[in-house]
Length: 198
Image (tube, rainbow, N blue to C red; front, side, top):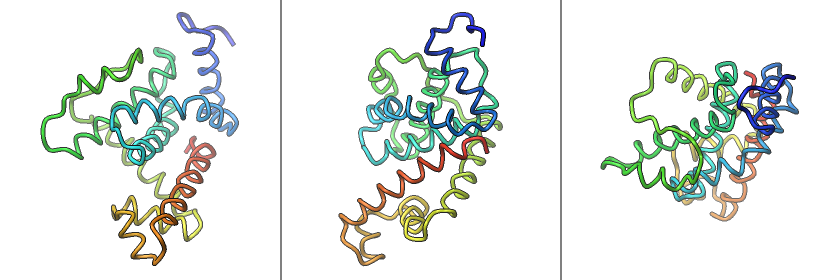
């Protein structure tokens, strides 16, 4: 494959993986996930300062990216595009969580040298469509999970139960809820790498 003008060797390698992922290569999806899962998570964690929220937003980021691969062009490096999606997801999350004005500058400063732009306007129709498609894709994946994991995901993220409320609902210790929910989210990650071309 030809080197993309202005791309580093790593960015060119990412682009090659994206092209393979667009064709449905599970190996390409897995490689992209492994390469960026931790950097994306830690960037998000710096913005929201909560590990559970950071994990959730990381899942959403990869779901949106994998569902939108056809819209990616090599105008920017894949990493820049991915981190922009992550940043926008964080901003959406912060908007929903807080009703008071948010100081975006301090969150942006925490992102070190990552070249991304925080979008402050409302989503355009295309973004809204992508978001709906992402939600539907995630719901479809959740429906395929083992009943126990499916129930945990639904209680935590659809009904927004606290760990204590889930513990009471399922009559199990809070520690068990946290451990099983972690396993459920890990399984969801694995499923996302295999179905990102949907």
